Amino acid sequence: MRILKPAECWTPKLRVRSFGNNNMAALCKGARRFKRIIFCHSLVRGFSGKYEYDIVVIGGGSGGLACAKEAAQYGKKVAVLDYVDPSPKGTKWGLGGTCVNVGCIPKKLMHQSALLGGALKDAAKYGWNVPHQPSHCWATMSLAVQNYVKSLNWGHRVQLQDRKVKYFNLKGQLTDGHTVIGTNKSGKETVLTTQDIVIATGSRPKYPVHVSLTRAVAQYLFLFFSEIQWSVDYDHPLHPFPHLLISGCLHPGWIIRNPNTPHFFCQHPQVPGAVEHGISSDDIFWMKESPGKTLVVGASYVGLECAGFLTGIGLDVTVLVRSLALRGFDQQMAGLVTEHMDSHGTKFLWRRVPRKVEKLPSGSLQVTWVETSSDREEQDTFDTVLWAVGRAPVTRALNLDAAGVKLDEDTGKIIVSANEETSVPHVFAMGDVAKGRPELTPPSIRAGRLLARRLAGVSTEIMDYDNVPTTVFTPLEYSCVGLSEAEARRLYREGGIEVYHAFYKPLEFAVAQRDSSQCYIKAVCLRDGDQRILGLHFTGPNAGEVMQGFALGVRCGATYSHLMNTVGIHPTCAEELTKLHISKRSGLDATVTGC
Image 1 (cartoon, rainbow, N blue to C red):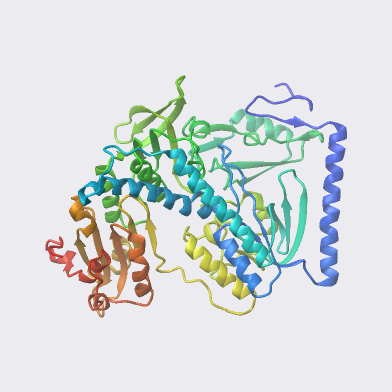
Image 2: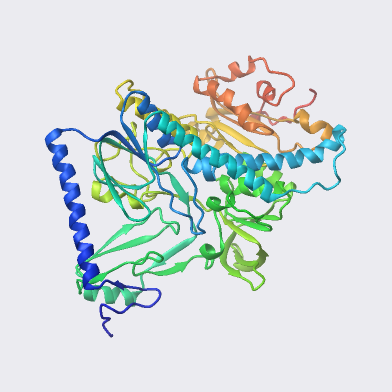
């Protein structure tokens, strides 16, 4: 085996960049200077007992911003660090986090665009003279959505300024429980000391890729490196993604760096071409041109929502599903959602696993997948492949190991207590990045505000994460609060619950003669006593608007009797929840008749 000299490089999969003596000296000088800065900050802090800030929030998403603004309102000196790493496709955005930029807001707006397309089809039956085949312009919609999002970015910055919250467009990392280092895009570092640190960095989409260390490379490394340590790079866009740390080099001039590929690793995608040719929800809302014929891989709520509005604006959309749709949600309701989508043009390929993505000379993407039960290969061509195979917490750049913050080994999320505190005193984590927390905007905002009040000493209230309502904005919307039917049966046994349900027809569907066979409601209740409601589930128009009010009742301990004694508003879909007289146990037809 030939030993490489410092000036040489490895193969393309295994590269070493060598620094000359002058560059190496400059690097060491910079490192020593940085250590002196940290030492001076620590020394001053030690003598004075004071910090520059009361709270430093790392992450400018919904939860982090809510925490920062609330704390400032109570007189705390607050700083926010926010920095967006571009997606593998190069997409980046402004202040506000996932919800504002690549999540709830643009998703709901594009969903609304699709609903308007459906309304145009209904309009003729209501007397409107509509062009026979109205067309949709992606560029017009996309520009309008992006302009609105940018206005929200600006609004957040103005709000921080009005509340005297210092905003830094820096990538933050911890050195201890009171020190944060912020790095800008050119590498310049700023050190901030603070009484408390709040981590609210959120999550990013994953791609179906894994990496491995070849045996030959491993043997070579162990020959020349005295210490090899492993850690998991949880939030890299190619998650899961082991990261190799090397110390004790054979030659002191060797600096192991490669910004584009894993250190010392051969990349073995589970799906070759997934990253090079695919996009994620980080990209879809910022595309200037229509995605065209689209394959959505994954049937999470993100995947189904994207597939839904793409179908709704007239595109050819296929969803590739490995096993379940809407994992974690009530599966009866998930089935109704996908049935409705299937009957309205979205194609589903069940029990399929993607194998590879290849770009053809025409520019189209040829995707090969396998039917899991028969191992039979199939393929088709698409203009766009959108990956919706889960999300990973953004923790890699935070230097959490050095600060002593513990992560969950399975998920890479930060382990927190009931009051959002991590394993390190004065360091807190909330939102998507924290273990056991719902990946939803409203509970993150609420948790951020409550945390700020506790840190300000004006409250001791902690966030209650039970009975958090949510909505999946598919073409037929699905909203819920509380337990799914399966969860209730598991907790209270088969005979311990009663499920009341109904199939109903929204009045809006009547004149338009829309199919309402998937419009369904069920209330999952305890069977004994006052029959406390454990969960409510609803598919139909404006599902989120319907469920918001009923969620209040569920949080207040509403019972089936309370529901039946509530006077409905006529004629509405929400009214149908007050008329659930048929139980599943009875076996009677649950179809609502009459008005």
